[in-house]
Image (cartoon, rainbow, N blue to C red; front, side, top):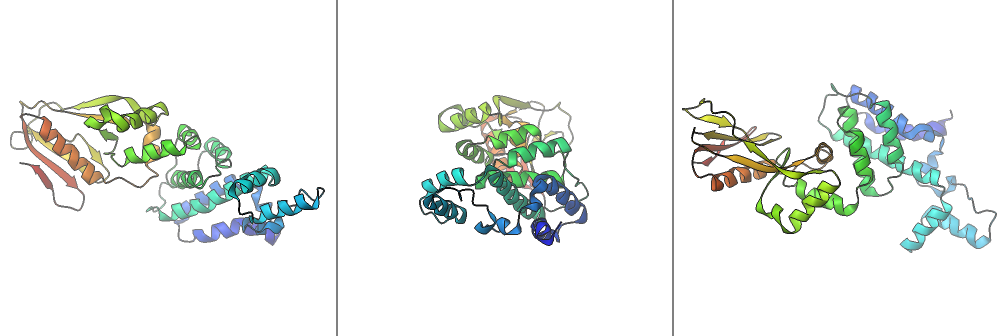
Length: 318
């Protein structure tokens, strides 16, 4: 293999120097699978230089040939015309190759951002990687390429983090559903969202229903009940109904307490999708759950606390 043929993969792997060795090794293996034989595409093409793309319209009229070159150089100002011309003149194999290369470059960035020593890293399962590659090469939008890169980085750092169902769901995720999910994910308290009144009607109810239809949320509401009464602290029992990342809610309750927490659960696919998004403000969301329980329970709650790692205990009641 010549220097030009190998320079494509090298251009990507050079930026991996900061990664722990186990992560770097697993990531390079995964990207070799993703890129396949793309290392034989001239380096100039990867740098978006039009000269490396064969002019397949050479046998046509001079106008058509000039038009194709303009497409390759991305010099056409009309975006609609540009898209149509790209479909006509740019071979599908190159479009798919370009998608995979873009995802590969983004994957390194996200892997480098992860706080890990690489102890749990490993190459993705072969069947998983085959499905990922087929779906990734059709991801032509910046949004989908970004999501696929986040998923691959997460799968390399911790294999088994993302199911095949999640891959297929992400591949079919349209912009409106993605926006619905982002809005509800901001209200997450870990496994789901607090069942507030606005999920019974209006736009929030509609968002929940749309996400349930595509398998990101449960179609049914769930209740979490008090554990068996076992006095542990000052004659009261303890209950931790909700936790997210480094924050959890602690409730001290008496024997006469009758309390439950109602919530709407994310599915496994929904939780996996949420794991690649920016984390919600768990502390604020869990504090809200505690205050809402205080407003609905008539008696039996003795003490309600929000615990966050590295911070003093926040007492909501009394």
